[in-house]
Image (cartoon, rainbow, N blue to C red; front, side, top):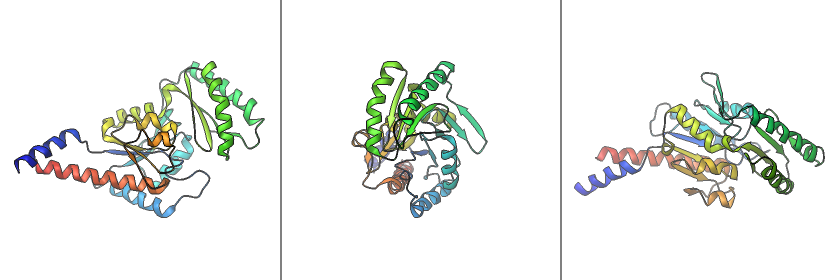
Length: 272
């Protein structure tokens, strides 16, 4: 019994209760351009509701490269009640208190450079590549959308060297349907750090699930990182847990795993 108590105390010191679960949107909550799996979404929503009264179920929120209107809409139909990160790390919106916070590093020079990048994207891709459109409603992000992954790959290969040569303060991320160009100080790592500071929780008390390169800055800094089966191989390689479920099912599986972790952590503490 004494050795068990010592081991339990040791676990209590090194293993942290997860106090917040953050999810990416496209490729996690749902697949782009496909109707969500509403049954699984309903299960996730039920857990979020239970998190209000069960301390072992962490609340869930969003960190996405999508613009605020889309992130807010998904947050509403999932019943989330914590602030959410949008445009990667460009801004945080607290829906409960209707408070909008922009990343302080997004200064006038960054905004001017981003506007120039948007002009470059419009002239070289939106006006020349059939099916390419700008991702609208964004302030801190220059984005392109296309429904063909192969076209995205071709545009990405051309855009990256241009940005590296002309705008070294920016970085380029992509998914199967989008390309996003953001300042290096407004990526998801910075977004999650700012959210943690706002909520006064430690990074090792946060879990995050993501599927593309833009998620890696966030996945690398949290206490538990997850990747769905549909994630890029290089994303799965940096995560603590590579799940066997796709997208929405993976988010639910990760949520349940986190709850189990928290309950085991609580039981270990009660044994001390």
